Length: 54
Image 1 (cartoon, rainbow, N blue to C red):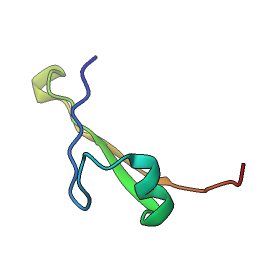
Image 2 (cartoon, rainbow, N blue to C red):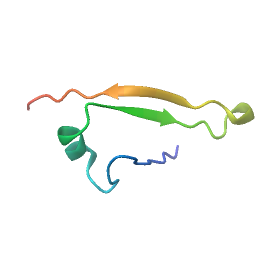
Image 3 (cartoon, rainbow, N blue to C red):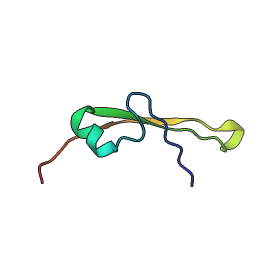
Image 4 (cartoon, helix red, strand yellow):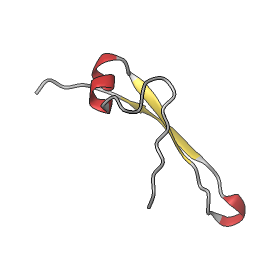
C-alpha cells in the first residue's frame, strides 16, 4: 500500500505531533480510491484530536 500525504495548512516537513499540540483540534482524512472498480470512490472522515498528559 502506498499512502500519499498532502498538506494544506502547515508545512509537511513540520512534525505532525508538534502541529497537533499547537494548532489542530481535528482534521479531515481523505483516502482516494484510484484503482477501484470504475475509478472507485473517495473515503473521508474527520479525526478529533485529544491530547493526554503523559
